[in-house]
Length: 281
Image (cartoon, rainbow, N blue to C red; front, side):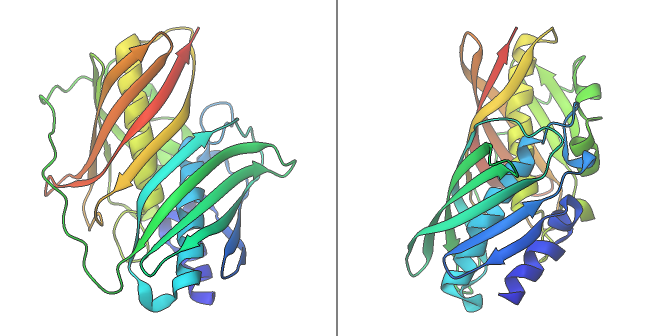
């Protein structure tokens, strides 16, 4: 358990967030994330990437504890996050529970909540233990048409505390499409040296949201991510990540954005998913 605790608290990305391992057992784990302004959106609302990060860390904690240290490396093959409410300038916690253990796959549910027990998010994770094997690289990314217009919102969005701390860059936000870059830098890394799954999911979430904003343009709107689904295909490696988003469907205030996350240098897909985003007046 000490190895798992060290991974949780000392990986560069989770250390930058301030994640604490309160309890790790063979079938459950409890994490804490004290409030830090640099983990927030404007108005001290916890960034959705932080809740997703707690989900993947919690799912991996119970998988590593259940299958043992020799079962690694590990990958979150599939994830579903439902965002239930906003955490505003307050500490949050995550409780992960093992649902089923196989020889190489573990299913877990992770609840994220405030100190007052207000539910913030609920996630289900499927974590794959590779037992020493090396994951195959993903297929080539589809990419986009190369447009380079961050629009009127792009330069302002990246100044939000969480986005600025990650060094996220918005290269394009036009006509329902987005292209966003996450640099390979210390505050985004996992212990082995690649980008942390939590930071990767924050990039996926952001890219889907930016595609929706690229459809509407700026205005007096309220917006949030109600749900996110993602699959991580391979380890990121030591490279920047680039994500391509596109609105595939819109129904009034609801947007469904498909996102591919690829290595900036090799162009291979690292993860893909769908971001359900809502923009209302």
